Image 1 (tube, helix red, strand yellow):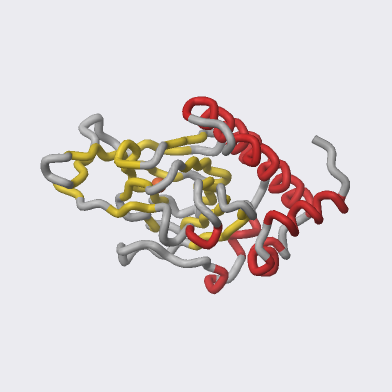
Image 2 (cartoon, rainbow, N blue to C red):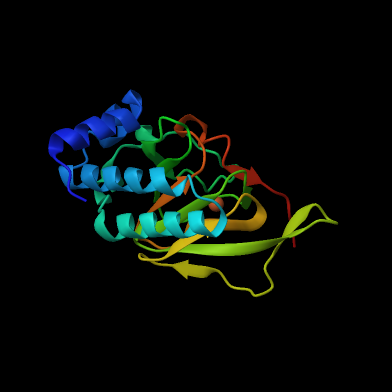
Length: 214
Ligand SMILES: [Fe+2]
């Protein structure tokens, strides 16, 4: 969709909290701001849908963004640009950058920069969410919830799945999508995540950390 620079600036000012604009988008070139604006417009529509329709619409919005955006400059942002950590693993410490926050609190978009051997904890989700790799590659290990044990077990199907740019994953809230993401590679990776929560809640209302049994 076409949008003038003035329109784009207005839209971003409306969509992004002022702190977010200052801390996370001041170094983004105009093309990225336009990509973010288009992502916001698509998500405005998607989040009003339900079930399969929402899944498909979020998938399409994120796939389009991942194919057109280049957030590589986030690799060079200082560590103090982190928006918070939600990890219990000593190996964790990846940086998260809030890119979009719906003023109505219906969704937020976050870029995560993963250094070598940085992993999320094993977690389910308190909200629907989707992610795509923009740069580099991630490994995803999937788990199944065992109600009797009140713990997760590694999916017997086995190995970690290598996630490359161009793929989009979506999961609903609950224990249906328990996983662990991380970067075992020497090259840093960037992923973008869409969460069904307000921007100010991404550190506390997304990941549902679970116990894991061997
Ligand atoms: Fe997750």
